[in-house]
Amino acid sequence: MDLRAYYQKINDTAALLTGESLVVVSVATPEGGKEGVRTETPRMVAAKLLAEGRARMATEEETLEFQIANCEAREKFEREEAARRVQVMVIPSPDLRKSKERS
Image 1 (cartoon, rainbow, N blue to C red):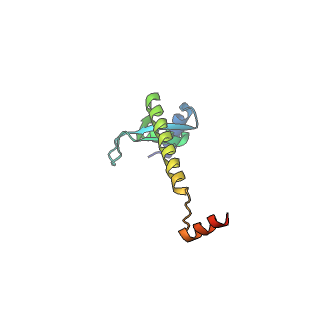
Image 2: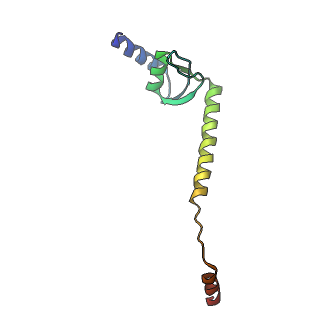
Image 3: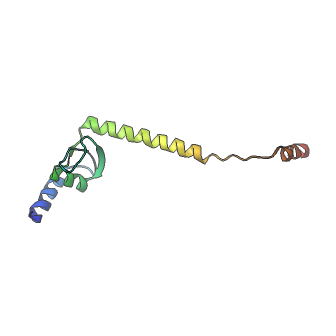
């Protein structure tokens, strides 16, 4: 394998891409790569995956679906984390009665 040609191909592919963060969709590979997995990657990683034939660029519709799913997952995670952080204080009933009598 000619490394110069390999890296030139990656650089040429990167030059065609716009933006710093891109969504790519994996393709099936002989090494066992799964088809259809969407991933948001930096431009150079996307260029490498595209140049190697391991992924293709996501369509606008696929990108939108991916971003909506990520937002929903993030919101769900934040709700679950907020619920975990709720603190409960248990006060024994005799102590509660004493504090009420003092008031």
